[in-house]
Length: 430
Image (cartoon, rainbow, N blue to C red; front, side):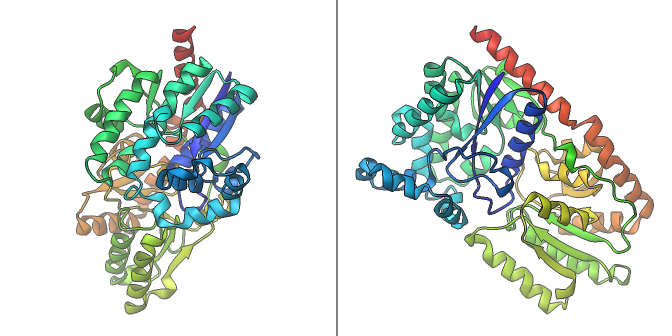
């Protein structure tokens, strides 16, 4: 089967759970013997995903300029190519405005209008490339914010179109009205041209059903997985515990909340050797969060126990996970999945997470962590203390990490379940 995966790039500047979800699935499908091509949109993929020299479609700088200055639609080809250079696009990825909804509402609406939007020429270019070079059996869209591509791709290429549903609400919730409501309406309309919608958790399937009206049979539940090559055994228990945070470093995901909990634990003599480490990157908007954490560390004389890990490559991530013993991202957002938990489990690192979004599903299936009451900092401290001070409980949670990846979030099952959906879609369009 020939599968084209259309994935928005992050520029490799911060931890992107959607990118990791797509990367794991692509590898699983390739290992199952299928021909898969990854097509980047907007920004380059992360450093470890730059496996091909494919062009970047809908280059972020070009489509922004054309959206704001319509006369630039006639921009010379050589200038468009220059603006699509890897260096410029990676620089654009560092700018907060390129990765947030506010200020990009009109462009989001335009993208969702597909051939009727201001990026119609970019859509034609993408379809020409797919027709001339790939001619896929299935085109898989990484998320529903790309659903404006579906109608014309399906019409022109006569292929199945599948779309994963994951964290679209994070972008849409940050939009002003009436843009937010219009966005959900356009996604609902575009879903008519999509053969299957893939929800990554039961929680998120329910959320999508509350936002758009679509045939319930069109929504399929396929949980995420992680690459088994990342799974590795730690030979010994840590002498001194280190709490690890791996996500975008901002207040939305509770980076500051975790530091405050860390301060409370460090007041206890038994946690004198406890450390805290962050990774995941951040945009310009959230530099002040990092500065505030560092300021508090100086105030409480905890600079030596705090670290920020800036290497977001696969090797860097492995190094980070190998040096932590407990994982915690006290998110305020109800995430659709939380693939970073599976990455922690792969390194035998149990977790403490808030009881919101899909986290309860993951903890219930894995039994590799504890939940605390979201929005209750005292309960967060209590749950962290419970795991860190009870060696028997810690060992029990740790043992469940790899077991859950084999039983509940198996890499092979991920591709098998997705291929079953693809085949079902292809039968319907024969």
